Image (cartoon, rainbow over all chains, first blue to last red; front, top):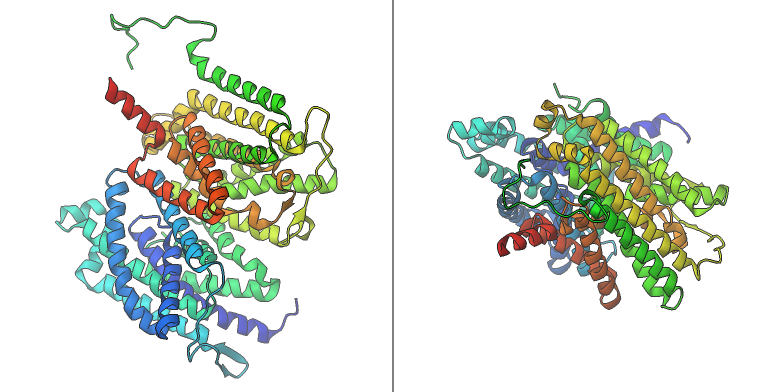
Length: 291
Length: 333
C-alpha cells in the first residue's frame, strides 16, 4: 500500500462519481423497499435485463444506449405495473408476502439469471459509444466520460423522481402510502394504484440503471448479484424512504468502495457494501437520516 | 382443540410406541433401514448412484435446516450457501492442519456454523424479518470475499483435498459418505420433528403468525428465534463438512453457489413448510428431478427449472405438496 495525496484525491473523486451511478441502481429499491414495503431482491436482475436489452439493440441496429433508454424505460414502467399487479394478487392480498413473496422474488432473480445464461451464455458483453473511452482531466484529477455519463444520468433521475414525488398528486399519494396506508384509504385515494405506479417507476429506473451499467463495464448475467447488497445497503443507510438520503448514502458507499479498492485491492470491494449493511443493521437500523 | 371427547371418539389403542412419538420412531426406523441397505448393497452398484444419493441426502439436510427457521418461524434465510461453505472450509482448515477423523470435522463445522448463526441472529433478529433476510444475503457475500482473499485455504483458485483412509467396513469412499449422510439426514429430520412437536415449535409458529401477539402473550420470541437460527446454522454447516471429501476440489464459487441457496429454499416451499416431512418430500422430488435433468439436458437447464418450479409453487400452491395432500384428504371426507 503506497499512500499518496494524489491517489487519495483521485480515489475520492472517482468514488463520488461512482456513487452517482449507485444512486441510480438504489433509487428503485428505495421506492420498492423503503416506500412500498416490497422486498424486491430481483431488482438488480431487472437491471441486468435492461443491460441485455440495450446490448441487443446496439448489436442488431447500432442504437446508442441513450436511444435504448428512451425505448425501454417506458417498457419497464408498463412491465413493472403488470408485475406488481401479479405480486399483489398472489401474495399481498393473501398476506403471504413475508415468506412466499420473498421466495417468489428470489425465484424470479434466479430465473432471469439462468435464463440469460441459457440465451446469451456466460461471456461478458460490452458496447462502444463515443463517450466510452476518453477521459478528461483537471490538474491532477482525471475522470473518464464512461463514469461521468452514468453519474449525470443518475443525478438527473433522482432529481426527476424527487420532483415527481413531491409535486404531483400521485407522487404525494405514493409518499403517503409509505407513511400510513390506512390513512390513504380513508381519504379516498387508491393505495394499490399508487403502489402499482411506484413499482412501475422503480422498474423503469432499474432498466435505466442497467443500461448505465453497460456503459461502465462489460456485463454478464450474474453481475447483478453484487448490486443486491449495494442497493439494499444504500436504501437502509439512507434511511429507507428518503430520496436525498439515497443520494448521500450512495456517495458514501461509492467513496468507501473506491478507497478500499485503491488501498487494499479490488478483491475486497464486494465486502464493503455488505459490511456497511451489516454494521448499519446491527448498530443503526434507522440509517443516517433516520429518527 | 377441546379436551372433551365426543361420544363417537375412541382413543386410539396404544401399541408399542406412544402415538406422540410415532413419527419420530418412523424416522429412526427409516434411517436404520436405509443404512442397512447401503451396507448390504456395498459397491455392487455403480458409483454414480451413490453420488446422486449423496446430493439428494445433502439437500434433505439443508432443506430441513432451512425449514427450522424459515418454515416454523417465518424468517427467510438467504445465506444457506454461506453456512454450508463455513462447514466446508472448517473441514478444509482442519484437514490441512491436523488430519482429524471426519466426525470431528463435522462436529467442529456444526459448532462454527452454529455460532455464526447465533451471532447473525443476535445482531439482526430484533429488527423486522426482512432485515434478517437481507443480512443473511450480505453475510454470504462477505464470507465469500474473506475466503477469496485467504490464501491458506486456496483463495479464489480453490484447493484440493486429500481423502482420508477408509476403514474396512466400507467398500469405497462414496459408500462411506452416503452412509454418513443417511445418518446425518436422519438426525436432521429427527431434530426438526422434535422442534416442531415441542414448545419451541409451538412458540415459533406463534411468532410466524403474529410476532407482536406472540410476544404479548409471553412467548420469549428472541430466545426462540436464536435457538432456531443456531440449530439451523449448525445443521447447514454440518451438511457442508463432508462436501470437500465428496468433490475433492473446492473453490469459493462451488462452496458459495447460489444453487445451494435456491435449492434449500425451494425444497421446503415445494414440499410444504409447516411440517417436518414437507422438506423431505420436496428434497426427494426436486433432487431426483434435478439428477435426471442434469444427466439428460444440462445443469444450467435444471437450475432454470428449479427456479420455475419455485415460482409456480409459491404462486399456485403456497402450502406446497403437504397442502395439496391435505386439501385432497379433506375433499374425500
